Length: 145
Image 1 (cartoon, rainbow, N blue to C red):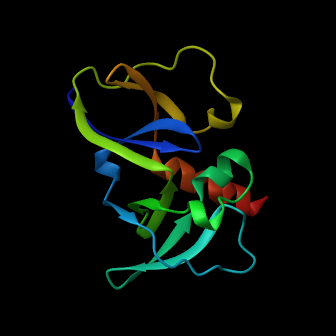
Image 2: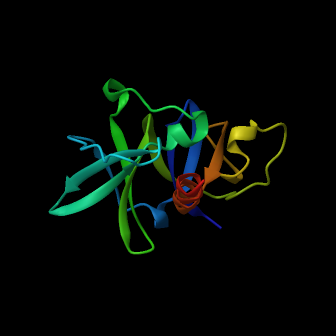
């Protein structure tokens, strides 16, 4: 096992992401809104001479945009050949977890059911294991609806 994970907070919930999905974590600068997009698309931003689509993942969870003053960090990922910045509340750590992924247990908030794959424990705390591509797929479905 000994998988490497990024530990963060998103929409007030502790999450873990396999680091193979993560290109970087950046502090967000300017985000240009894109008219006609779903609530989960915060806009476009530039990073190292390329355009990123910034996804307000919390909007997928809560259904409302994150206030501009709370837009601080994003996890950068290349998903299906496109560059995305997925907004998070905070990033805590990157480390190996010898136990790896554990099955979901207990009662899970229904808003997270589509995104949670399992649990990863770090420093005695459970973190929902999520896949960044799952948020993009859900956003595409939300946009199509």
